[in-house]
Length: 82
Image (cartoon, rainbow, N blue to C red; front, side):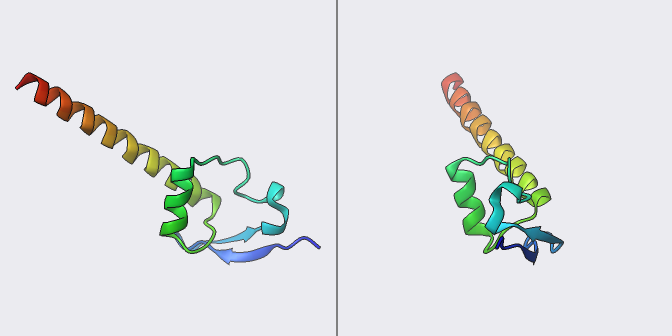
């Protein structure tokens, strides 16, 4: 029997159905994460997140990563012009 759980997202507190026993039908299906993104989410939240929050986290992580790369590049350029 397929296991479905009614849960509340620990990030936004909204209810959602987790289909852990039927991963191909789960709301998280189709969202791909790098190992680092997955590890960050796993370490930040103790349980499954709703799809909306997973997408938001992915965006936040990528935005933060891009900002960090830009900061590193700009610092290197600044050092090279001094």
